Length: 223
View 1 (cartoon, rainbow, N blue to C red):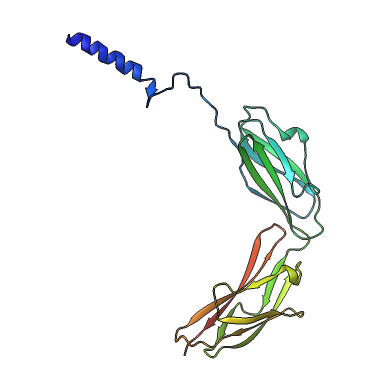
View 2: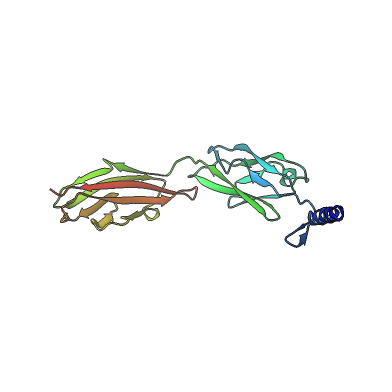
C-alpha cells in the first residue's frame, strides 16, 4: 500500500510540472525580444559640410528617417535604411550641408514595431548664440533697496527671443530691457531682518531647441 501511494505522489508531481496556477505552459513558444537603439543619442557636427556616422544595435528589421532637418541632412546610402533580422551592430552614415547661419538641429528616428529611438544631429553655425553680461553676475543690494542697471550683449538673438523672469521672488520689480540692451530693475527694501537672495533669469531657446539661461543673483543685507 505504501509503495502504491508513493507511485501516485510521483505521478501527480510530474503532471504539475507543466501546470502553474492552473495554466499549462507546455505549448509556450520562445519569443525574441525586440532590440533597437542608438549607442549615442546626440551627435555634434561642425558648421562645414561633411559626413558623420553613428552606431546602432538591432536584432530586427527597422526603418530610419530624418525629420525636422531633411533639407540639410540626408543618408549617405539609402541601402542602410533597413537591415535583415539577425544583424546586431550596424553603422549608419549621413551627409550634412554647410551651415551659414546659427546652430540648428535635425532628428533621426529609428522605428521597428513597438520600438522607437531618436538621435539628435546638432550642427554648429558660423556664429554661436549667446547672452553676455557686461559686469558682475552677482549684485550686492543694500537693506534700503535701490535701482540697478546692467548692460547685456547678445549674439545671434533678437530681443524678442529673450525671456526675463524672477522665479519665486517678490524682491525684484520693474524689470525692463531697453533698446540699448540695458537691463534695469528695482530691489525693494528689506524689512524682514534677514538677509535674502533673488535671481533674475535671462533665457532663450537656442537653435538646438534647448533652453539656455544666464542668471543674475541679487544678495541683499538686512543691517
